[in-house]
Image (cartoon, rainbow, N blue to C red; front, side, top):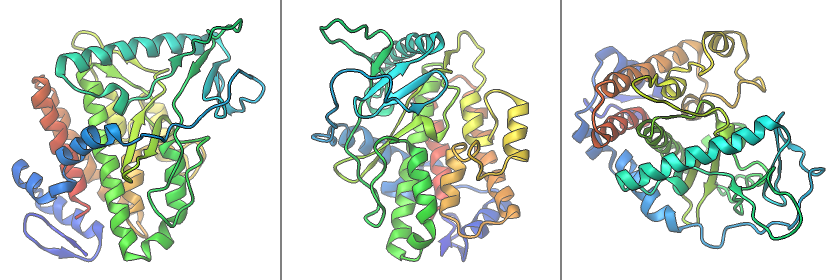
Length: 352
């Protein structure tokens, strides 16, 4: 059962609640919503993420093999490959080498933001490829080291996440495959809700950090988000792969990351947006990794129909429009954080 926080009306399905919220176009006062959400509210989740999860990965770093081997690096794409046994990324092309330089710059920009706003965000919410410094005769200029953690699952009933692909996408596929049996157990429905809420709030906070730093990631699909379940059973996500990122100068910030996250608009433009949202099957290999907010919210909904999906997307679009309207006021970082908080809380309020 789902209830409206404003009027306490009760609904059988989540989509009925969404339709109710759309019809009356109401939302709680920001302070009321924070109070109603309690420990599931944005500021509580992010505080737990920063304060608790910062020290809750002790003993989880996976040991890696020494040396290098380009032959065993089968995971990766056109420009890079990844050796999970050695925790190494290998640049196969000059374009990949340029990505290394770009990532170093992004890391420096986020470091400045940490100092300026006294935020401990760089190592908590972002994962970078670090230079390899070993005193031998091997040229490591084409290599970068990454962090790999021993895996565990948020759900006792699910197998461990594949540590060779510790992405949010990999875990999404695992959850999608297991969602029907999980939903048969009431306790797991609540656990799924908690998991999704934690992911949603962190996604909004990561986008806040990028916005304040004036960084456009440009490729924030689930395959470029690392997922770690910490020692307290809390899901940690970190954005990585800044190969398509850029720093926005002057007054030209165009909110492309946020429009992708909330409005399903491809960073690359109209043609790709049309292909993703109109032509391609949602279950196609090209499409499954996209739109994390929409995909995880749908995991919580059983038997969603096309009309219901349109309604849900419309509800999310309303949240997006309000957030972008507020951000265009160019307020200070504290006020901007409040805008992201309000949007994130409004998003997860539909789960109650």
